[in-house]
Image 1 (cartoon, one colour):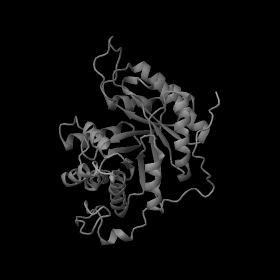
Image 2: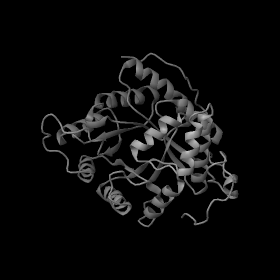
Image 3: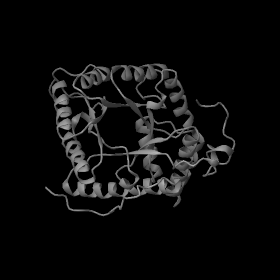
Image 4: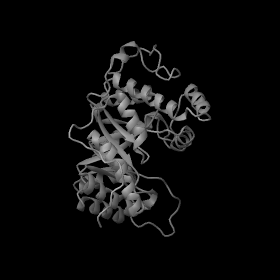
Length: 321
């Protein structure tokens, strides 16, 4: 799928040469299918703010909107209520995250039932961050992600997505072990995988090419972090185990100390998107950090078409109780 030729052109930002001459001709926005990720709101006021941001993005007719889940189930109510609000107010399909770390089997599956009861049909099954030992022993915990995915499949969930890691999961013993674990998640019932955000397109292509040998390449969706604050992004990447090429890290650190931080962030994302598009990628999962503007700017520059009948209302509206 992915050729071995190395890019030799000049990149948009002039620092990270991702695009060769052929890629300049690519029209990346014509066929792109998008999904957006947000974290749950904690108050009704925050729900209103979040919906206002999402209205600005709904004009791109996303496949689904993803709502995260707090470590150890700490934000389960926020996930449920935010998912419900997005479905009702924006008529959007929602994919809710669900984790099992530091939680009992019965509690987790009860949340899955509640999500199904409010009309959620898509779920992202994750281990979740370890928040330390629980105050009281967890009764009948899941033995791991594979058992968790199988349990969801047994309960009738057909659209189960999982996480994949172009840069290898930070807890994996090796790249091969990480890949074998991803295959096991597909075998357990996963329908698709969404990647952690990344900045080296080659790492995504390597993972996609390995999956292609098992007929799974088209089930891998790249995750793109729409950021405009370089310092925060670098800290976030370090926490998540995301590898940033050294030359790019050096230039980003320089830009973080100037008033060009947002512009430089955008140029990096444009380069990455063009490189992916040139190699046939047409689906993108965007981590929005609950802000519409960075994503909007990126999509407009890429020429992503808006839904012809969409009339966005980018302001807060009163949420009916």
